[in-house]
Length: 349
Image (cartoon, rainbow, N blue to C red; front, side, top):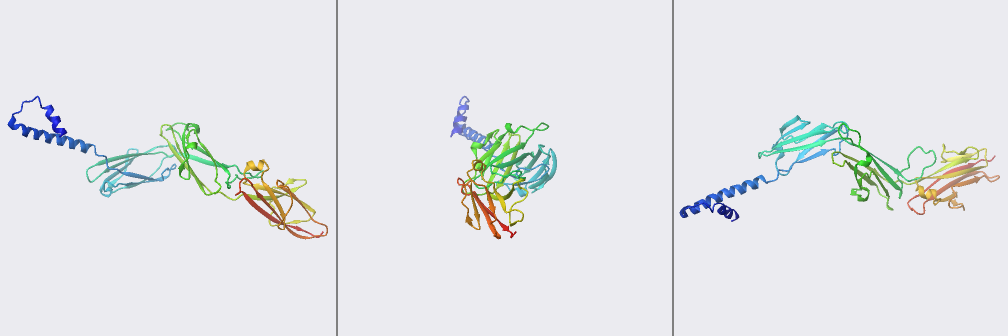
């Protein structure tokens, strides 16, 4: 009805004989119908073709596998052409997958895909593959003994800090500063809005009371979205440890040897033992808030709760073996608890 009115107004200035009026109206209606139909056909959306890239974030010089799927057309009967940087690499009916090698770090590879469907439709897709490296390092606030040659591991209820060090550079340019990039942090699949944003390349959190494995991910992009990087880390909390060392009155703490299994007293009638916590919360350790409980043969020794050193002496005329034990716990973090022991043998001399 709307088409009829428009045509009628456009032709109102033209003299039409009454007997042929209906013929002209019918003719213009057909013209209007085909014009509307043509407009509707041209507005139809293009058939969707899904390109799946594996791995999703390729590394430098890594093999990349691309597969095509579609629910709008039979892609197995379509002619598919694959080209990299303008050079055709593969073409044929039903060629719905392609494997190629990614370029060097921060080097782009232009992947062009042309799909000619059996229905006569031509669909073109372009993918830009640019390997970007993001180093994701982490540190825990757990305590370690002096000269410890490793890093403090992730223990229950400790604080973890993740640091993203991206290596993103424009073509032929220097790397962009980490503070000039945009970060999206995720913890166990959920975006952490408070930690995400421009220049936020660090993320810190304290593990929950019920400790479970945690996955931390970071997506790094440039401000103009021309570069993209990704990194992830899977963490599982461990139990803290207690290590026992001998403290010599002359040489001091003998960190080169852990007291375990059996130690025999030969020349000396006494030994000073030092208990060192490992991976306990550093703040509580510095404040002397950890509780030390010493024992001999399972019987608790009455000592100050902060006493990390204990002296054991051989009684005159007594020989044998005693089981020396120490347990350390963090009263403010109930999951931080550990115990250890060793056998101390006294001779008859």
